[in-house]
Every structure is written in C-alpha cells, then in structure tokens.
Image (tube, rainbow, N blue to C red; front, side, top):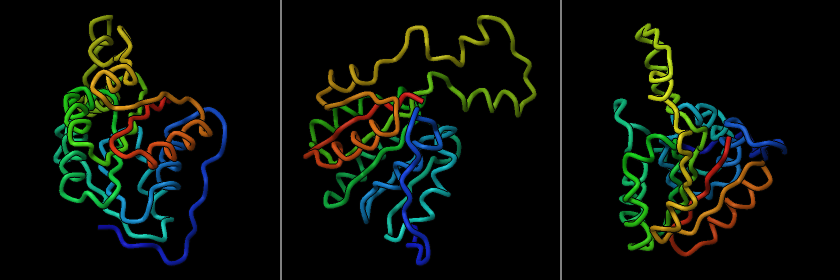
Length: 196
C-alpha cells in the first residue's frame, strides 16, 4: 500500500506522440483513489514510480515477483475478484503479457473491473537488458528475432476483442487520456494498446 503524498499535485502529461514517460504520467494522472495497480510494465514503466509519487490519494501497487514474467493479467484478475469495489489497472508489457493472454477471457467471463494498458513497444526489451547484463554479444538475424515482437506484429485489440474484452489502440497522449477515461467508465474489463 502506497501512502498519499501531502505536498504534491497531479500533473497531466505533455501532449503529442505517446512515449513511455508520458504513458506512466497518464496512468498516475488518471488512476482513481484506491486503485490497485498491477505493474508488469517492465522497461516501459520505469517512470511510473516517480509519476505516482505526486498522488494525494492512497492506492495499492503490486509489482513483478522475482523476475518471472507473465504475472500481470492473472494477478489483475485475482485482484479484481478479491476487491470488486476497487478499480484494477494492469500496466502491462506486451511481451510478458503474451505469456498469460488467456486471462483476458477470464476477465470477460467474470466481468472483472480491470483496465489493461498494454505497453506495445514491439520488443522483449527486458531480455535485451538481461543479455547486456550477462555481457552476451548476440548478433545476426536469429539473435535479433529472439527479442523482437514485430514479425508478425501482435494485434492486442484483435486479441482482446476476440476474448470478449472491448479494446482500442492509441498513439498520442490525448488519445490515451481519452481511452483511460473510457476504460474507467466500463462495467467490466477494457484494454488499451498503447503504441509507444
């Protein structure tokens, strides 16, 4: 549980093309009081901690467990079932979200109060970081392909709607702010593919 800040105010993100920084600022700016943030945003969400430090209302921040990826979608479902009166926001990396995609179907079946925001950067960036830490010098087409999610590109809107979850894709800060507000008004799950 993160305590509310007493001295800082929420600031809206700057407008324009969506970036990881603006995405984090938008989530912090619009998350409602008492929200449960399931944060598996990995490399796209590093600015969220600082952005959320400006909040004047309490919320719960659940993060990745010990480096295992894929926890976000099922954890957000469990949080929504355990606390149906609270808004759950699944702040999710695109690569790790693929590990447990079937949780979207369960969110729809249970009509769970989950807003999933997919940080779609088209790469397993966390794996690139781990390769760098291990000082692995991987080159060539096969090595690059092992960390890219672009051939074929993943259509999160199509995947979500195919499982009964309304969804939309956004590419600007203004579109994201509108989509988050739309998602928070839903009676049931909603997914935003945030193209960063």
